[in-house]
Length: 332
Image (cartoon, rainbow, N blue to C red; front, side):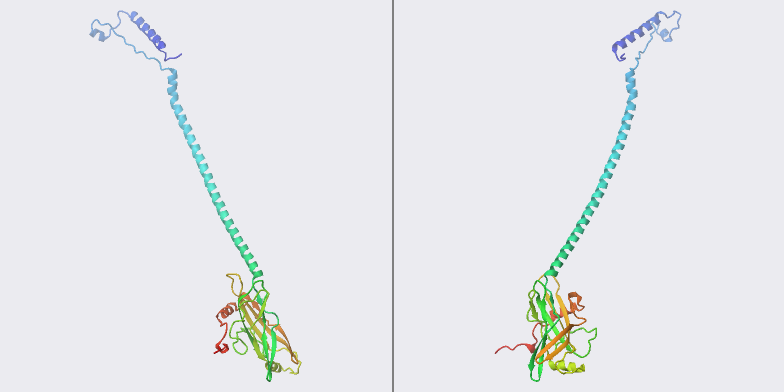
């Protein structure tokens, strides 16, 4: 039944009016009058009734249910807000972790790339060093110097020199060398510095006369000249017989160095040092036979030589040729 129906309301009003009329008819004569009626004379007594229709149950239910629904909506909204906040926090944490992971991965990638670059640089350096070591020029001295004799009045002059051999596959540039000789009956001290001798048994300049040695080629070093009579005196000082032919060790020490450059750019100057001692000197008529042996020191290459820097400096600062005493005269 719909309590909002106008017909229902009209029917209720009719029932109420009938009840009121019935009450009026059944009222006794001696009923107490309303003082208000007495004041107004014969006016009839007015009984008023206020018709109050009941609020429909549906309206009441809607009114009662309105606040719980709103509270429910608020609760749901709060729950959804909490869920959204948790979801946002979760997403933010995931993003933060992904950013950290990406940062670590980037850093790892950078470190890996750096290590790879370092490894590539080392590989290139090793390959370059291997190429240079195989293809570079390498000048060394053979075991035996060469000796030639020239007869002069009452004596003979011995010329001593040594080949400069390039065992490398490329040419050697800026070749400079110096040689020196010692004729002594005494042993050299262990701390002997092998100085460059400028005088009778040494050359004052650093030059071979050939600034380039081709690959697998050779040139002769500068020469030292010594009188054969000096050899004989050395032998006598050793209390040896001078009867010819003779074979005896002598105190003749021949040493020197050579500096040069290879064809590769930005490579340091190279140095090779040598030292030979005359172990056998035999004379048969006009024939002279020599045997040389290595000295126990002053045989080295490049930075293995303890005086590497000094020798390179001496080679660069020494005159290449020639002192005034040896300068050729110009024709008039």
